[in-house]
Image (cartoon, rainbow, N blue to C red; front, side, top):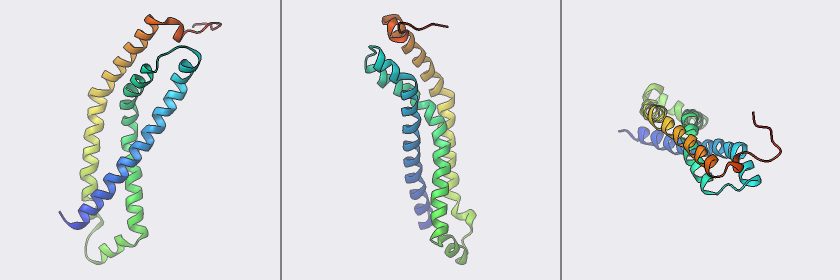
Length: 153
């Protein structure tokens, strides 16, 4: 593995991890504020449901945030390489952009495999567990889901 491969791989992995973390946080917090916060504030829903809700919603957010994070990382890394004229220096030394992109292909294949695994195995199981958790909450404390003075459709 050449030095440029290690450099591009390290930069991509750091940026992918940071972008996935930030985007997942935004999606999960958005789902919490939209779906669960009214239940926590207006009704007596235990905080343990918040933690389980986060655990079951996270696979769905990762399905979207892994490709978004990879795209963001690619744009950041290669944009910085271009802005610092490192791509021009590599081209002047006879290294093609395709050769510089080899670590990107490996990381993209890894992200694709993770997304496939999440879509096929993890997300359906998490959705079923989320439904059973909501059903469990509805059977234990129905007033937590259905407030007074509300019409139920």
